[in-house]
Image 1 (cartoon, rainbow, N blue to C red):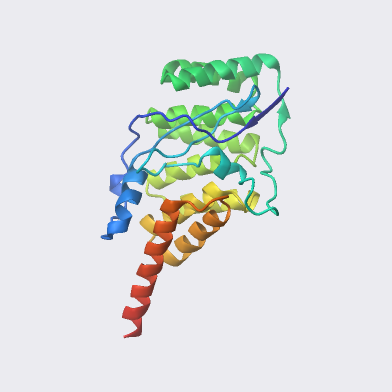
Image 2: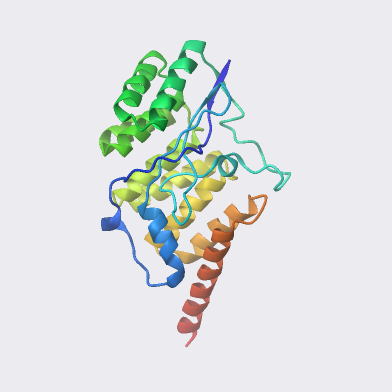
Length: 260
């Protein structure tokens, strides 16, 4: 059977480490939902079919995920631009024994039940027995991140990338940790690395747009990435449409002030 990583759709309602110390608050009414969404870190995993390892997920209403996008956003959207290339990670699944898949299914069930210690034990077993599989490392990093063990989370996510340099979810999750730590340059680099792997990775465009918008104040770059994200959707994302309009207004206001 084939084993590979995908994005996620399971939502775990739990608080993550606070990001308030590193957040840029900008007084704009349209930014409220973005700040709230960034402050809420939702971790999610899924087993789609019998052979997938899980990644990160989409936001609850009114919130923005700290890391990743829903499955259609991560893989590229069917029905959008027909010239989209396949996600290079999902296009190249690796062989894995049935026992590993069963063990990973148990780990996912533990994550769904928010049984973090059990999930950690199962994922650690997988990383020991199958260290070249990127998915268990990614999800172990998620468990560590959720339980506020950031050094261990970083190590696990770096292992996920080392095991498979096309694991886009791992780049994004590690970027979130760097952003929480205030290392915005490192977060930017990781998002850009993900886009080097696959320029049509919508979630990386969205997350990089968030970083430029709320953390770095580089509104022109934020606008470009939000527009790229939107172009990769089968249907326009209404919330992103609002953010794009807000950025255009702010950039226009800046241009008017500078032109005086």
